[in-house]
Amino acid sequence: MKYLMIILDGAVDHPLKELEGRTPLMAAAGEHLQAMARHARVGAVQALQPDWTDDVEAGLMSLLGYDPREHFTGRGALEAAALEIELDRADIGFSLNFVHTDGHQLLDPLAGGLPQEAGRELARYVNETLRIRDIQFYPGAGSRHVAVWRDGPDGIRCTPPYQAHAQSLRAHFPTGDRAERLIGVMWDSAEILADHPLNKRRRDQGKPTADMVWPWAPGRSPQLQGWGFRHGVGGGCVAGSQVVQGLARLTGLKVVDVPGATGSLDTDYTMKARAALSALERYPFCLVHIEAPNAASLSGDLEAKLDAIRRIDERFFGTILDRIGKLDDFSILVVIDHPAYVEERKAVPGWTPFMITGSKEKRQVRGILPFDERATDDAEWRIEEGWRLLDQFLEGEPG
Image (tube, rainbow, N blue to C red; front, side, top):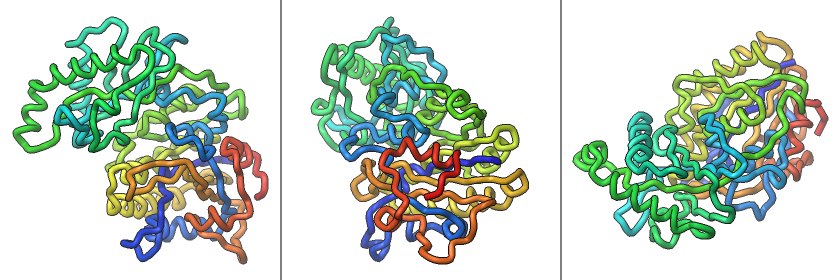
């Protein structure tokens, strides 16, 4: 038996006037998702408790079978693991954005979406120019990188840049133990980035500049029981998201390198599908994470969210369903980790739909639930602690 788990990040949303009271998932889900639901057991899951609002990424850990109340420390540590950065117990990993500011307000949390090599160039430049002994900067991709504070303080608190959008910088700077040190580094980065040739070119082209580093989501490395030990099988992971790649590395899943899998709106869904099928030839289990719906919501771009869901249906699921039956008996879990509201540019905890289908699932003849927000109200199969869903999928428990 082959097991394929697909996380559609942030695909749940509100009903919208522009869509005549439908959600983006209701409006854009195409023939493949609809056909899967007709041959699936559909349920509802709560990956995170309602009060878990600051770190919704912990929902990914939950869906991988680890109780975030026990194991989640902060997404920065997961992104450090994705880049294979060693963290000692006293070290803190931070997610790191380059942000666009006017010196007073945060104008763009992604600095206009830096090309990958441009972002890497700036991260290396900041690290080499500031030369701070205990705080280092590591290049990731585009506007998203990692900072590590060796022997860093407990109790440092940081605001995600999305939450500070169009607001005062100073009102959202880090707080807590030794926060002034980190704020000083942020101002120092602004000074050296101002005259960087890349920013000069972007300024001349009328594009947002990368004006400051913004560290956030601090965390120490979590201790997670290995995937093989927990489940007795090996597995692969197809994801452009550094958070998911980090979770995979920490749990022992093999991260598959996929050209064109960016973890953003421009990802290559066909290549992701082919990579997942290839991974299933080698392993019994494969995790696929698709970030685009969440990225569109955080950017406030409804058309991008609709387009992402349509292309996921056509290119990703179309490729999967066309070929997976040639491998072996199979089971597929499709799940959404959390709602992400495009009007509010915000991701929050909440109930989301999931469906389990496969070669041994029978066509549903009555009580068919669509794979969308309606299932969160109507599904009889409800899993309140999201970290229990994976075991039910792998063990084939009925809803």
